[in-house]
Length: 196
Image (cartoon, rainbow, N blue to C red; front, top):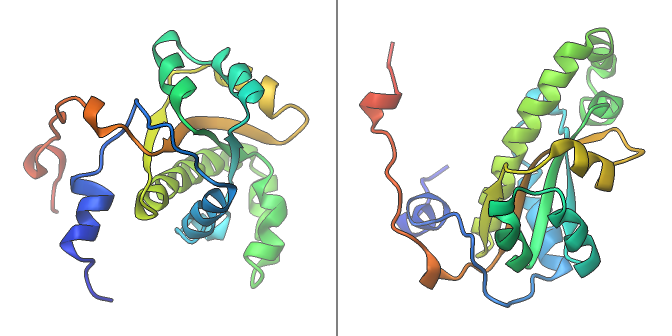
């Protein structure tokens, strides 16, 4: 494979920003489908794919979502065309025979160790959430991940009766670049990395 162009790297990383203010521009259901179809190819442990996504566009469903988020996040979510609950399926291992067909009994590895299953679901749904955000950016949209909310309330309001549990929320749409603040710094390589 060849490296991506510098323009693509800017779009995905160096010039991409987390958005809190949004333009009044619709995100079609087809675009949501495209986001998932792109993001699903990112790697997960044993191809377990534990992430599940609830896309919230409907006004009454958005109002319900707002009751579970921290006060400082209400306006961010209210203005976003779509807010996605990135969740993990606690029983992701039920799909192992399909997703890992050369070793279908690998499911037993998780059913016999539910702490391992829980850690695997959380870790890999978080990875998939990152792939999701890159897919959003790759398709020309913006995103704004949020962790300030009540997980239990989200689970009760949107995931009751399922084996899904919320991980984080990510609003998506077309960001209002005129309302961006100055970009915050990042740690340097020497501050954050070691080569051994």
